[in-house]
Length: 192
Image: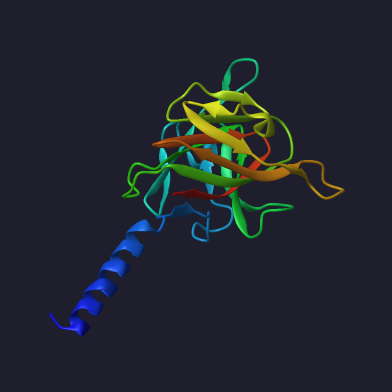
């Protein structure tokens, strides 16, 4: 082997190692597409469990919303422009849960993040089919379904009263995340 061949072999090996170590990412950004105002849930004649959207290998289903202290609701979600904090198009939930299924993204998901805007009511959160947390997203437990949960939040600028932030979920494997609320916008659901 001449020196040029050895250097080329090392360069190729380095490129392969670098590409395999880069984190893979798949995201649902809520468009467009779909177009602004796209409805899911009751207005779209969906039933709980229906697959309504697939983006980047992530399947999104609509599910019943779990009320406090008990009971269920199933209303609507739609693509919207949030009044503050979330740039561009996002999805607004109103008494409905969205289940994000990461099993078809082509890699083992160990981290999921999403941005949110909460303008009232309470939220639901479930990971890998865990019992559903019902309460303020900003006060979610540190562990749900064996996954670590971290929520940042800050107040929205006046005159709007609410919270905005990011949810970060980490675990050895994340198959599904279900989230929803009463006046909750969600954006940039990303799996790594």
